Length: 457
Ligand SMILES: *Cc1c(COP(=O)(O)O)cnc(C)c1O
Image (cartoon, rainbow, N blue to C red; front, side):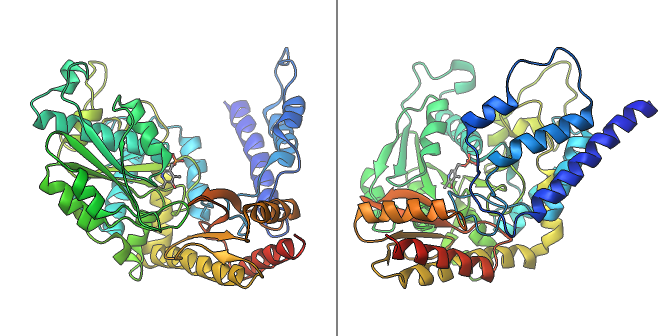
């Protein structure tokens, strides 16, 4: 046993040293990787060794070989896609989760991690202003949180129409209409596809990408219906009118699901909570902890308000499991049976920040987004295309061609990373401020880099 323990300690000590070096490199490191996946396939690949390698040596090998291919996503100068950083408490808790190796499916078997997740779930509902009794499941990400919430939706709207989908399946079922805003995230469509619900009907949006309630009113009718709203548009950061659209949808008996992958966290900041007004009336929500809350990948959160709806859709019974018939087991709230205790880093993040810390985190991200937008708008020929209400900024540099050229030059420069995209029929440079560690110096460095790229283009 001593030999086994020694092997763990040696390997983990190496991992800790490499972690320290990686994090220490963040302040000065260029953001982009310096090697491509094809190059790294060669160094990391080749024939499988015929025999064993010492675990600590494996850690050294891996860290050394993978390093040139790592994007500095934890850097405060990284603003690509919508990618959160990692809070210290959450990263360390994630290490413990791996070391503990608890298969967190059953309360009876892993009470330590199950209880930490239940505590984290209650804090999430509290800090996001969602109904205290709602069910919470920790999924791999927002995509699977959509899947979970929309599975509950599918089951409930069909039950209301007199159809037991768990027993009868979808063949011959009443048709479910699904209405989504034109600018919903594509993962909503993906989850609908997983659920056999086909391609949704599209509701038109305003110039910020917000679903228009008048257009929704025209499309709503009778019969089983699910309405998917969005809190936080990946381009503009804009929020659908959640309260008004939910009230309208409920008049028609529809289920309302909200994609708040990053935007739902506005609810945690008193100055921004008005953006998600009316959220307690919603039936199911998706959010990510690995974005705005800054826990390591992978951690999405599915919240379902209607009693039993989540467990009716996701639960199962098997004779060899030990079931908790009261509170319910973790596996009844997610698609998987076996899984890591991914809610534990959420517990650690929230425990370390406290209520004011979460509010400051979210406020800070939105404040930095405003500063970046101001800085970019001073670039000759640049135009910020969205109202910067939250963490997202979209800018054009005149023609699509110039915008693409500025983006390419900026990424080659390496000081910062922002993604190119297309929004409202224009090429854009897209900024998402999602990392707790971004500070005023990072903002200045990033804006300066944009000025340099534009001046040279
Ligand atoms: C990132 C994102 C998703 C998908 O989330 P994953 O965690 O990558 O599955 C869905 N909706 C919105 C608005 C997002 O920003």
